[in-house]
Image (cartoon, rainbow, N blue to C red; front, side, top):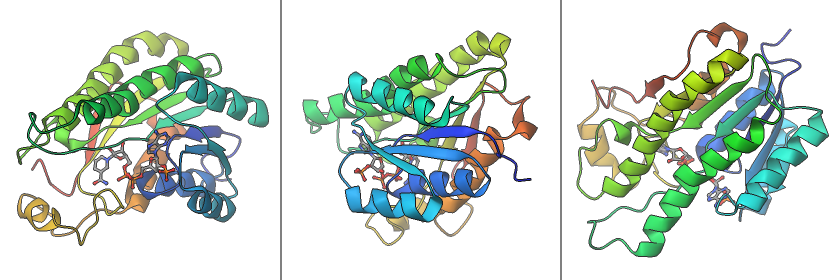
Amino acid sequence: TRPLEGKTALVTGGSRGVGAGIVARLAADGAKVAFTYTQAREQAEAVAAAAGAHPIQADSRHEQDIEAAVARTADRFDGLDILVNNAGVASFGPITDLKIDEIDEMLAINVRSAVIAIRAALAHLGDGGRIINIGSINADRTPFPGQSVYALTKGAVQSLTRGLARELAPRGITINNVQPGPIDTDANPADGPLAPSMLGVMATDRYGTAAEVGAFVAYLAGPGAAYITGASLNIDGGFTA
Ligand code: NDP
């Protein structure tokens, strides 16, 4: 049997990039998977068809949308075992140049939405439950200027993960924070303008793939990872080496 057979999962932001890689891998490992998206309906439908997953249009900026997505997933699959908080946005620039709207949006999607999704999911998660947050290696290292507020949001994810590990361990639920380095997606293309400087500070001379992050998340979601909790775990090609 496959490692996640019988498990059910919700991934936020699964229509593209890292989230789509996570959806594909959780489904390949046997889980029933639902995922959210906002704009990219065609891509969401393609991901859903390829993985046999269930797409839900839900905007992580709005608590009603997040709570409804959790409830719909639990209804459809008769429970929820795995929550992956992946939806995230990045605006880079000197702190005085960032627009207040950009700052608010990073805080809302990268931090606030994870808190709300976790609160909603805890109505359903039981013994063996898994919460996996997608943070960023920028929480530990920000080698370039212009990343301060994005890094702040991912630092918040680290602290949230640590704090909740204490609260959730008595219920048999683990929570971990996966911190990717550069991963080839629309948000950070391997052939984009940032790539040469990123590669310049890494041990590995390439970007990572969404499938590689998906494999790591699937491991943390599985039965072998029951003793890992409260951890921030890097998958960064040696960005922090
Ligand atoms: P992409 O921009 O490629 O994809 C973002 C995904 O999130 C899309 O599925 C998008 O949906 C969804 N999304 C965006 N806004 C919302 C919203 N308001 N509500 C619901 N879903 C939303 O990003 P990545 O795949 O690169 O990043 C995914 C996560 O990984 C983020 O948390 C990011 O911070 C983190 N990360 C990425 C790294 C990288 O190098 N790529 C490095 C470190 C961390 P739609 O298609 O509908 O727009």
